Length: 415
Ligand code: SF4
Image (cartoon, rainbow, N blue to C red):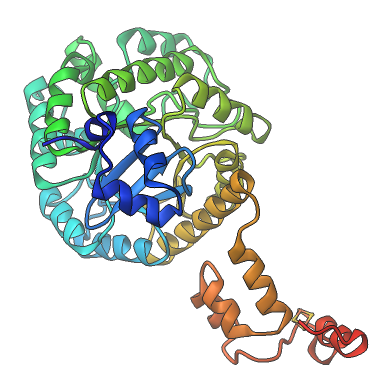
């Protein structure tokens, strides 16, 4: 079997490339070229989606149990809700309960691609780091790939050298990446180099066999806006860029996580461009970023602002933030709010990347005509609009002094 990137390199336009081209409204040869040079990846579950340069910004929603909150059915419902409100992909980050069953249920419940972070399952199954061998880590990846996950996150760019630099770094928040911290704890416990790095070629073989996308994790991201880009962060992004290049050459598609976490608003655009340059325009996946730290309980709003700027500057793929970020696992409403906040961010970002959309123009025309139902159809969350305006006629904001109605009457402009 040829992977998408192998087919693309040989000039073959696959049915997945054609599907993505149709969805994105671009020529299939542009998609093929993007896949061939690593700037676009195609993930396929029930339908293929494209992520990368020149394409609509995609959003990911995280779901999954934790070691202290285990309700498998609720997590499946979260995945369904996230997809309903516009998530392009789901990441199952479960660390509690029957992780394999939860993942299978999510895979069956949603049509969009599913990502996992295999080290979560390995650690959850062993309960501590010492008994885990490199082989256990590889075996988890092998099993998850066989089950059909579409992308796996590994923090292979992290090294012991970076960890010793982190010890000396003057960071407020240290390391905030969960996958990064689990990988680091294993390395320190075993006094050993990064297992994902040491077994990288073997992992690539596993991924290549099913065209599973490699996502290179961002262990060194900032955990607050006062933790500015430092040497460990720069070293990791460079290491991930080299690993992505190796992956592409082995026929494996790669996404690079970077830039995310918490970034002061004045640095977001500059950092995204810096990252995109280092990674040769490969798909950049950004968590958030949060441009302030004090929006606790409303982090989805703060992150929507950061993500809009990041997307507009070139980030291709955004990981949502919910109102419960830093506080708890989100409930269903919070998943909906986080997803919509990031649909808004992606839309603003695309508006910066590609210009104002036809959808915005159409909605404005509906608004001008006071066509409420038309507006609901075009709104990013029409259901919310209907909840606020159930009568779908008139508007209590200005009542009988509706500016639009008055001017239509006095100026007689006909649309
Ligand atoms: S009543 Fe006011 S807010 Fe409502 S549609 Fe008319 S101008 Fe707009």
